[in-house]
Length: 256
Image 1 (tube, one colour):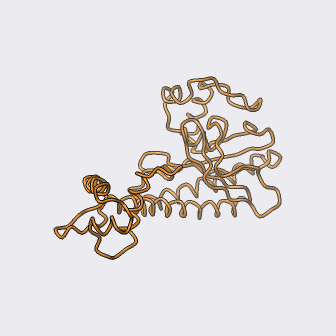
Image 2 (tube, rainbow, N blue to C red):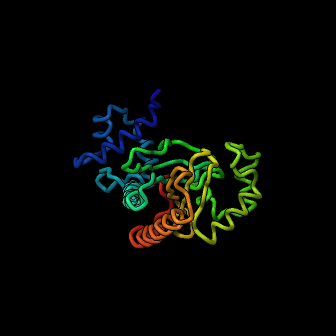
Image 3 (cartoon, rainbow, N blue to C red):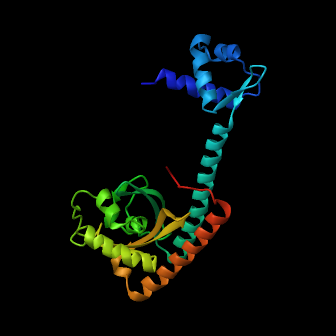
């Protein structure tokens, strides 16, 4: 069901965005079929919050808050495209499925997935969420969390998804300590007994804003394979973080 008061606000903003005409209270009321008495307090509120402004001739136009939102959306989209470019490079260099996720409460939310060219592909889905403690992406995202923060994120016992899944916060925190040193998170059969993943956290403005992983069948995993792909991931991590700092210094997050 459409919420009419909210719809009126959206229609006002859309009208002021998409027209170059001079819009007064009466003209807006006429175009949108909103009674002037109903429209006036909406315009006053939008003006007070700096979403619109009214000049001395009583003409309404968009104000800086809308421009801030527009710029923020554009910046996030551009930052995502930058990261996706490097994900494609990771996929091409490793020949493996490359995925990106962000942390939402205690789960990984999968934002992007780039499949390899070969026929063997990992069954996972953009838009899915999985416990962060059971995935390499999640561990990379949790890297900077303190023990106390982990206790707050996970007030209940861990679900044992496979026999290899981390059992508790103590084990998780111990693994995160190692990830802080090596900057690589590993997951081996913890979500799927046949799948191994390694991931990097993307750091920006002293926060981890996203993580990128490669996923592959455990059959392929040996020291030579892991050494080669760890280097690829770390090289791309450095490039991504350098470019984000250069082009998007004010970026706070990727998705929220």
